[in-house]
Length: 152
Image 1: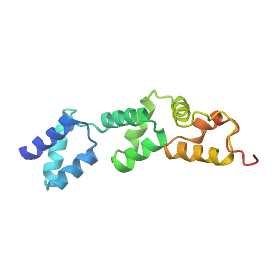
Image 2 (image 1 turned 180 degrees about the vertical axis):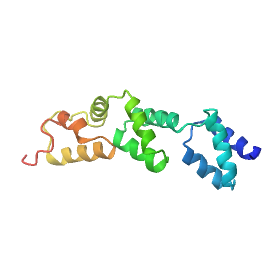
Image 3 (image 1 turned 120 degrees about the horizontal axis):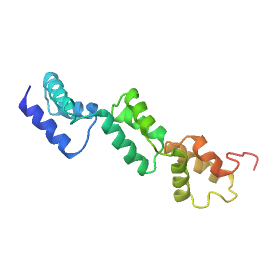
Image 4 (image 1 turned 90 degrees about the horizontal axis):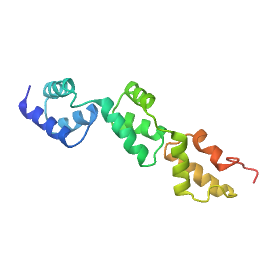
């Protein structure tokens, strides 16, 4: 194992957690061989210095505190951070976040008058915002009264 690769990886992990995918990308950019990357990662994972599960837990809590829903966070973990679906599922099952309460909090901060009688354009705006932030409709539709009522 290259001590240069190991030192680079330890230096990365000393600053913050990274997913295995992120570490591999960063080390490939620095032109480390695949063998050196594998050996350094294995060394760090055996000592629990790098863990996709711990990374996913921290990322979930960080993004949830920033006002994003479970759908968006799952997508980011899978597509941007390269975390496996199995790890994401385990982390979500262990999480004690009340997504419905979080949706209400985001809704009330962004749209303080969400309980008033709203016109269709405003309701559509709220729906687009909440869905784009990763909340499922079931988590916020009850707070909007009748939901998307196109007869108004």
